[in-house]
Amino acid sequence: MDAEPNCAICSAPNHAGCLCESERLQIALDQAESRAMDARLADIRYAQTARTTPAPDTVIRNAHYLTVNGSSPTPDTTSNSPSSV
Image (cartoon, rainbow, N blue to C red; front, side):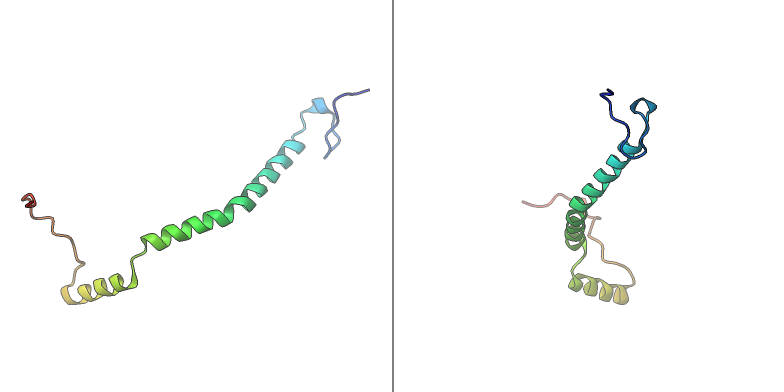
């Protein structure tokens, strides 16, 4: 009696080095991970996008600044003096 079972997919003997079961297991693991993580990753992406997207009033203010001045507003970096305490 053989203690080692044949492949459940192609019925090859165990010693034949059949990869059917390991490939199917990897597919099943990928599908389970996708089912478990896709919704969570979408929520994380949405939260990060919402957090980093400028508010509409900022976009409108910058657009107005561009039409009036011809360049985007930049912070004043020319001052090298230390701030007074």
